[in-house]
Structure formats: C-alpha cells, structure tokens
Amino acid sequence: MDDALEVVDIIAESELEGLFVWILRLVGLVAVLSGLGLWLLTDMGLLVLPLVLMVGGLVLLVVPSILLSVAELFG
Image 1: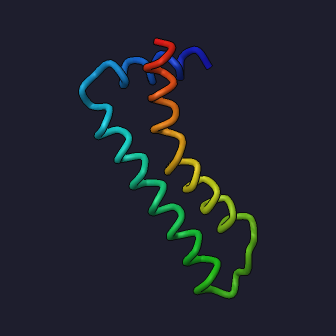
Image 2 (image 1 turned 135 degrees about the vertical axis):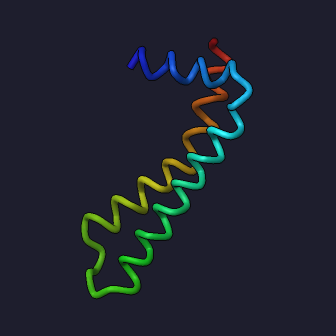
C-alpha cells in the first residue's frame, strides 16, 4: 500500500497529473462501454464479466481525481 501511495505522490508532484487522470478516465469509459455492450448486445446476461467491467470502469472514472486530491492534501 505504501508503494502505491509513493507512486501517487510522484505523479501528483509531476506535471503529468492531468494526463494521468485523463488516461485512467478514458480506460474507465472504455471498460464501462464494453461492459454495457456485453450485457445489452449479447445473450450473455448480467454475469460476472460485464458487471466487473462496469463497476471497474466506474471506479476508474471516479477514483483517480479523488486519490490525487487526497495525495495533495496530505503530501
């Protein structure tokens, strides 16, 4: 856990903070859309894979900005 916080601190201190956040948001958006596509466009139903993709994508959309703001407050 400490290693992950160190990486977040390094990213927060560098000028690549905005780029990193937008890359993670883009990956999250792709994950949400692919989960929705698997759920709605196939006869797979709401199984584990579409659900994991949608929840993981939502987490990637929200968490990077929160994590970097917390790192700036405490770091």
